[in-house]
Length: 86
Image 1 (cartoon, rainbow, N blue to C red):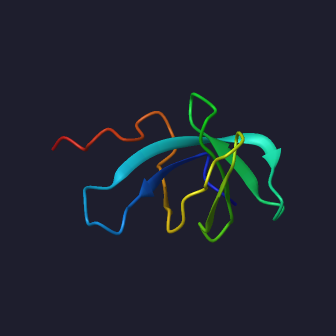
Image 2 (tube, helix red, strand yellow):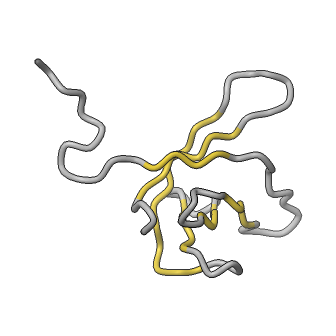
């Protein structure tokens, strides 16, 4: 079962700081049969497999989908992302 939300980590070969973007599952499936995830703007669309393999999909003309994007599943539930305070 795939997560509802993922962080997509975009890195470049130049070694600069990676860009991180949160995407959320949609009801659509991609060409590989896996769920499609999108960012709030709908510009970034990615198919993510149940093994967290990422295929970024073009959402418009003349786009070059990036390679080497990593998907990190985000926790679920009301306290997701809230650190434990002891």
